[in-house]
Length: 252
Image (cartoon, rainbow, N blue to C red; front, side, top):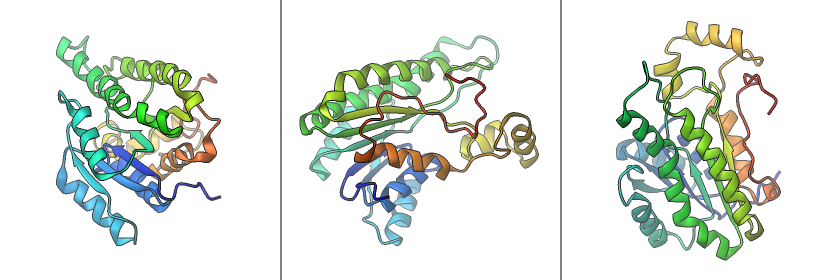
């Protein structure tokens, strides 16, 4: 299937490693012109060089911490200077924040800023232009909104899903879609180094919790991102689509 993404411009945040890197690589393979964003410039250069080595246009690099004041405006200024317009925004930056006890005010505020507020600000910086051109795709890579323990990232995930749904209703008539993807256990820096840091732990978790029987690969999520970014996905809007091998125990 031709996803009709050739020539579309896309910005992927958190693109230096893991899910973000793979999403960028898949979008490049589909013909997108890319800007990749993260805090570590050396890793972004590696991603950009790898994409260029495969014969694709080398992505533009945006070195930025999206949680800093004024980040959304600085990012938009750079994108506007390098591209005629932005068609696709993939909000991938974020992270789990498990805590012992109740956590501190600082921990809760940091988690909300990273996992909700920063992506909302960045989206709001670009969405009016998308509406004016009658095309836009916003995909939020979020996380679980059903807590299994005290984790400061869970309420921001719920907030992101509600905001994305509200935004989808605001911009849907303008050809802009807004969807969210909570990953399950997928190989990434967070899963492989922090949550399930050994092969035995990963195998045990998958056998007990995941009908698929294994931990997913970043490509398993990236292909859905690419489809949701496509003009062909025009009628999929305001949705929360889990990519977790069936691990989620709820039907809603």
